[in-house]
Amino acid sequence: MEKQVLDFTVIIEKDEDGIYVANVPELEGCYTQGKTLQEVLERIKEAIEVCLEGDKEEVNPMTFIGIQKVSIKRPVRV
Image (cartoon, rainbow, N blue to C red):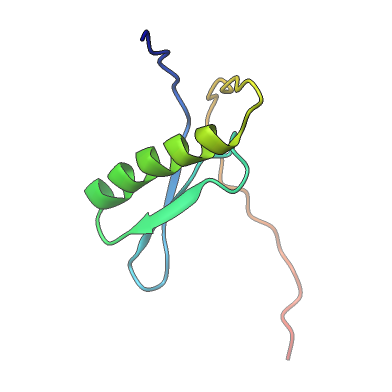
């Protein structure tokens, strides 16, 4: 059986407890976490496979353009 190679953009962040959290914007609800970068990368590949198995629609990964951090000012609540 021939296999198709799909490339997905994975966003990885580190939470306040030092846990890495990864998500795939193209696949709604596709996320995981791990204690190390290697662990979270292994787990997100598994999560992508599970999400693709459950999604019967054709998946067309988006083209990654970049990431931009945006700052806003908001009132401090007392």
